[in-house]
Length: 339
Ligand code: UD1
Image (cartoon, rainbow, N blue to C red; front, side, top):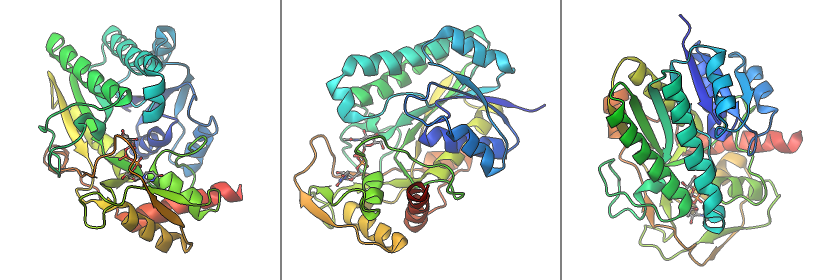
């Protein structure tokens, strides 16, 4: 029988890629999304990839009636919970909104899962739960401690799931701790659509290469890294999406019962800001003018995954390198400008 996966936030940047990968494996996908940070056009764009069309329930995950509508479409085999707010600066300015949307959404969703007897969950967590890592590469057993309200909501949701699996031992969950997702679908049809001034490095680089922004500010040139700029584990969003598929397969094979298993999704290889700029310039064939400025408060020098658990448990590893990340990111940015 066709399996059905419910994807909250399935119209967003990461969600849309996850949905496309799920459809490509012949699964049925029901999206619940309120389009607060996604373009309604995304559903058509996913369909144009040619792998199928997701079902859509428009609404907020905090709304039990909309959740019941989503769970009522088809018997759901597994849930991927991607919906949530994700801007660090905004979370510092308006913490209650972050706690309301992220924690409220998670609790309402988990209650709906219990109501509908669905016990397989993949949660979109983040490497932000490691706070300021004491060593790198980072293993899942590393100390946890978020540095801002956004990060705390991710950590608290993991803890809520930890509590839930104790109370409901038939429940199985994987919390995927994303490192730095970048790039876009190879079709150029879906990608990241940052609203306003981008906070993250790659969207900013892409807009600078495109001439939308004049210059990139490199936050800090005096970190204890090889070239003094921050090092991150960038991961192609298509690899990240396939990591979700691997997690769903793991859960649907009956693994992970009574546990919330944290799993890093990263490449295990770090790139500095300057290396990223150079790779992007090569891919785009355009210059990315930049200035080295002061460090951004709250940033860490280096954050790189040890991705071996994902390989051991799921047989998953990232396959796409920095050149492909930049080329696909640029292809999507170029299409945006042409449309
Ligand atoms: C950021 C968030 C993190 C979140 C992640 C989601 C902060 C402090 N952290 O991580 O909680 O989970 O995004 O993807 O916001 N950089 C520049 N110039 C820029 C932008 C970034 O030099 O205009 C540098 C940063 O200092 C850093 C690297 O680029 O060294 C990556 O930055 P970014 O893309 O914002 O990701 P993180 O800081 O790793």
